[in-house]
Image (cartoon, rainbow, N blue to C red; front, side, top):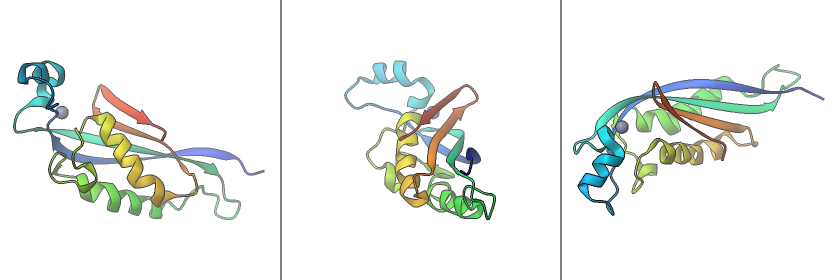
Length: 137
Ligand SMILES: [Zn+2]
């Protein structure tokens, strides 16, 4: 029985966003989202850590083809998010308030079908040095 391991791949993107809830007053939005409520948006240096869980292939000694994984993450996520405004520029975030929580779920929905084989185990989206969210689908 091949051993099951978890591997992680760290990627980075820089993006702007504005967090704002239309059902709250401007004062309430500012209190809730603070700097992230800035009217013209502001930026974060995000890190996305993709965790893959699966059995080691006895032939290749790997769980997944890392080049293919890199290509999927680049094409589906990095190209679409890097140096973009998350409120305006990203098709799969349209109409979504781009909190780290909402963004990590949307990223999962982009990556999971492309990676396939039930291999995607967990995503970690790091928004600041001190704030990160995790999602396991
Ligand atoms: Zn922010």
